[in-house]
Length: 292
Picture 1 (cartoon, rainbow, N blue to C red):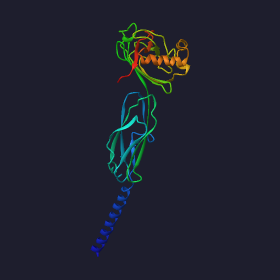
Picture 2 (picture 1 turned 180 degrees about the horizontal axis):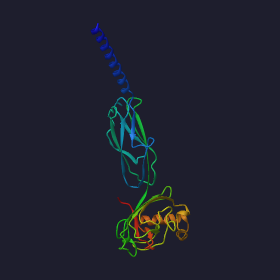
Picture 3 (picture 1 turned 30 degrees about the vertical axis):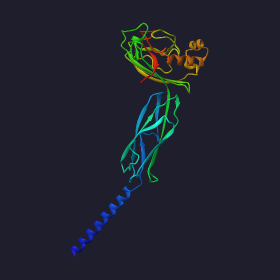
Picture 4 (picture 1 turned 180 degrees about the vertical axis):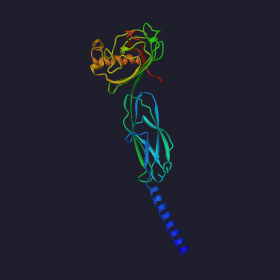
């Protein structure tokens, strides 16, 4: 009797294990679920890139679902400035928790938004698909460089200030389609707190020229400090972006924009940071078209 009862209990336990295994297998056998990263709401922005420059981003495709995706096909549809340079996903079957990568290059040839492109991965199963919208924008790029030292330096002032060991960088993007200018500045080690910062134009290095942009200083530029960083987008068809004297000398805002852009392209405009000790400017750098 006892043996019979043991056999019954053993049989019931085996059935329970079988039911549990089937249940787990059923959960693991759900549809594939594909997703790209990095991604924000199924989109990715390359940001602002200099015309003629090239930037790349590697995207990871992951199957977080319960079954394999079957053989994948990866496509990129959109403007020609965006292209796939490496594809490790096509013809790959992604099992659960498996990943593969695709690298996309953005190489703008003209100023302005690139327009949206769609990176798509799809398998034979209806659920095995993932889209990622890619965007970017391009502008003419200029960097502070010289004439005596790279970046922003007291050696680039006229006359030079070798007693200042402050350093800094400046990058300027000019979008010819929207007439906007993005100014990015970093500086460190000024001898005394700064009092103003702006772009001067137009003169051959290492000469001195009047202020072209907003006076007494850039909109929102950190003042009264010896180090800091700054990024701002200016509407160059807005009179508030300019020194009124420069606009008057050029005969209007539109002409001022044309003159400053020409000065940037010719290396005849410079970024200048003024301080309490050096009222005429402690560090400067002439802005040139970026070649790197």
